[in-house]
Every structure is written in structure tokens, then in C-alpha cells.
Image 1 (cartoon, rainbow, N blue to C red):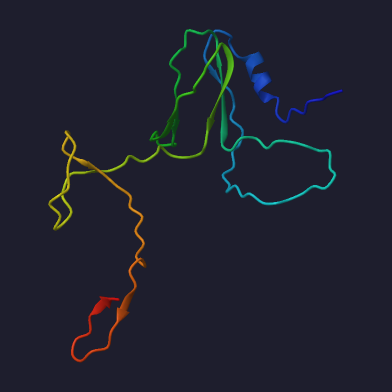
Image 2 (cartoon, rainbow, N blue to C red):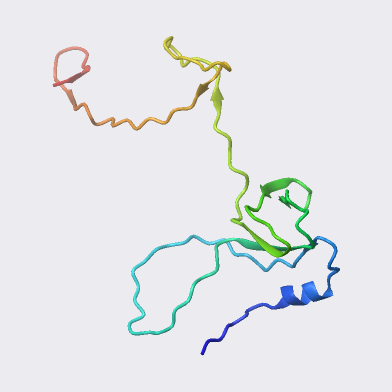
Length: 158
């Protein structure tokens, strides 16, 4: 025997009240932002198994037919500024769900259009900019030792 626990049936009530020939947004439950941490934990011999809901806000909406191919959801502030635009991967007739991970739009990688100071060997692509490169430099690779001498002391390598 199996049983299901529905923690919120308000979307079913909203669908029953809604017009069946209009695109309809269903009420959004409160979403909580938290930092997920992995830990080693054992419940012993417990037979209770469950799965936490996905992180973020569930955005449920009703599509009356399959003519709505290009669906996008715009998350906005109270002032109307767009925070994020979400395009669901799949939509079908009936109730659909998209997830918002509570983040803003991803930042764009800067396009560098000038040479670093004193470096003339930098190359640019055909559009006139060079991509930002991330380098992992080990500053301790060369062991610099201070050698005592008269007058000025300068770092030198062994």
C-alpha cells in the first residue's frame, strides 16, 4: 500500500477556478534561500526515506493548448526591473513547472580591448578584443632568499 502526502493543494483549487482557455499563473509558494551543506549523517535503521524539494521557487503555470511554443517567464522587482528571464526546456498542454534558483542573470565575461602595460605580444580576435584568461600562478615556485651584503640588499634566487 502506498500513500501520497500533498503539502499544498492550492494549485489544484486555482486550476478548478481558472478559465480553461487562458494562460494562467498559479500561486507561488514561499521560497527560502539557504546554503546547502553536505554532511555525514546516519539515521540508523530508520525506514523513512524522503527527498527534499528542489532549491528555489516553483513557478507553476497552465497552458490551455500546445500553440504556446515559446514560453519565457520574466522575474521582476517591484519597480519593474528584470532580475532574471527563464525559458522552460519543455512545455505541454496543461500544468507546467519551471524552477527559479533565486539568482540574478549570469554576468557576461568582459571583452578586453587594450594591451596590458609593457606587453606588445598580445593578440586580438577578428572583432578587436581579447578574451579574459584566468591563470593559476604559484608564487612560491621560486624560492627567493635574502642574501646579506653591504649596501643595498636585493632578492636573488638560489
